[in-house]
Image (cartoon, rainbow, N blue to C red; front, side, top):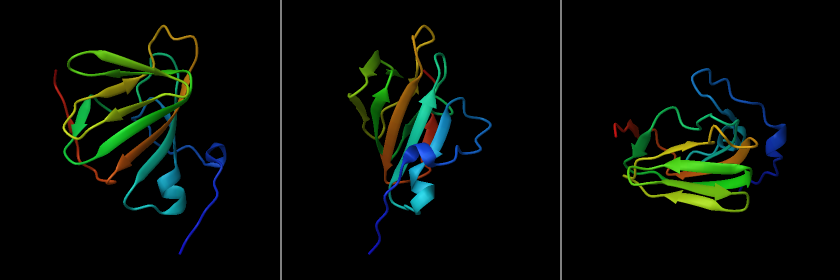
Length: 124
């Protein structure tokens, strides 16, 4: 059995030069292999993912800790404020971002399962 108590604020930011948002990986810190869990901080105008994309298998949820997170989809843009979450089913194209005209950065807990590298670029 294994257990861990973590303060995500104490995790180092991942060295991710291609990503706009800052990412702190809970999964990497504790060695999770079936669940991807990360805390992102994105300033106004920044995106969380590397590209507009979809996953074949992975389910994702974005729990907004502070600020407002927007999600671009082929049909509409969604927005979630602190205390709300956005859920994305497999096969659903999306791009999570903080609106350029937002008053503040957003801090977001992103969870995906299974933890698979199955992201595919989506061209609207």
